[in-house]
Length: 446
Ligand SMILES: [Ca+2]
Image (cartoon, rainbow, N blue to C red; front, side, top):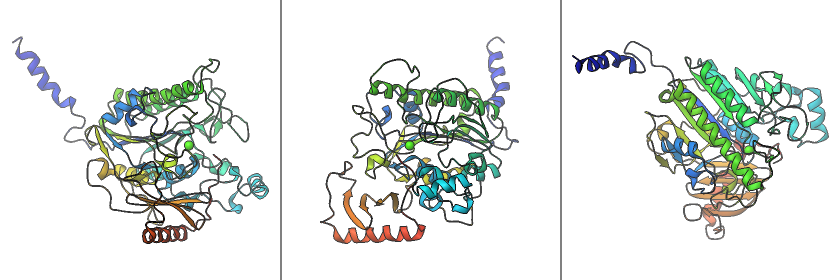
């Protein structure tokens, strides 16, 4: 009796341990997107950096798939965020006609046509949060918006149920005052500006954990867009004197702590096997000299060398994505919208062209996506990628042809040796520019 009782108890309890009973509808998966700001390709332990400690992000990578050829759509913050939320090249959707702007921003634009404050995500765009919300998801932006400052560009106009964070490019990590431009408080609770004491990365993490707890019984989409590791260089203890590199390492560490706490919140509410977690960055690094942020890639934030846009990407979904895998398939920020729509079984907008593709089959271990060209444009600089070839240029002139398979450091310019390929890729770029109606500029300063 004493030996059979635990066995009997185990049998009786067994059905309770199954997440979804035979008669229950399977819960729809949650989606957590953690976006780091200005985090370089080589700035994490799992991407070969031996100087920083990123145990939580490394564990996330060990539990899922890590991409080695993932790219931000832009070399700067805003273009990537526009692509990410629309599934489209940012050049399609980042401009707003004068008539749609409030007078103060219209005047700013007149005074300086490339002035960043006057631009934002077109109100007519169908966004990822709007589509997920329509499919029954609770949606939150916790962190950085950076897709327009005018009230008409407020993130809650684009499908987010909740917003905690800042609308600008960066804030002081302690005072939450806008890092440039207005110099005003930029710390929001939904549509109100409301400051709170605390280090911004930690505050955002707390909000994220609270959002998960509040929505544990409903499908949710959490877009945790950290300010870290964007400037200013500020650790948790602002008065402590350290070298810029040491402060930067601490900031990478705060990002890692955040990932650990978000994953812990999912585990606490038993959501880990029903939640897709993505971690990636919005562009290359702007790290202080002396920190090996880019694993030897050429260039950094703001350039169209690999160092400007090849970024870390990790996807974890225990039980659905095989642990400890890597893929060298090329993918881009704009692919996340179609991917999330597939996860949520949500309907993609039928009235406009999406440029991104569903990465879910790849993340689940399937074949690489069908071959496609990838394009970048930053100011007058542009690049096009076909297979392992990358042609980069400025205005109408091609400047370099690189075979990334043999030359990821972009040192060996093959422009003169491959004229036929250069011509093909020039034509591909020209066709792309024509197809998006680009005015060939990005409305942001680094
Ligand atoms: Ca950025």
